[in-house]
Image (cartoon, rainbow, N blue to C red):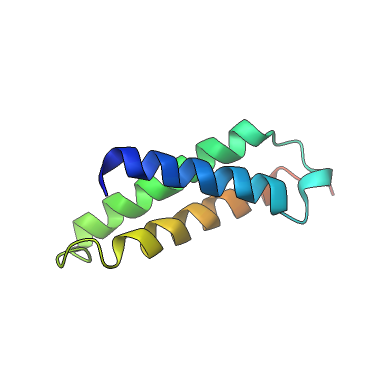
Amino acid sequence: MGWFGIIVLGAAVGLAGAWLHPLRRATRARWWLAVVAGIAGAALGLMAGNVTGLFHDGDTLEWPFCTAFAFIAVALTVGLFSRR
C-alpha cells in the first residue's frame, strides 16, 4: 500500500469518523484533529503489523488492519474530546 495509501486511508477514515460519530455535536474536537488521529492510527497499524510479521504475505491483511486501527483512533479521539 505504501505511505501515500496510509495517508489517504487515514484521512478518509478521519473525515468519515468526524462526520458520523454519535458525539460529534457534543465534541470540542475539530475535523482536522480526527483526520490527524486517523492518519496516526493507520500509520501505527502499519508499523505494528510490520513489526509483528502479520503482513508477510503482502497486502492481504494490511488494508483491514490499518483501517481498524484508524477507526479506533478516531473513535477514541472524538469520544475523549466530547463534553459530558
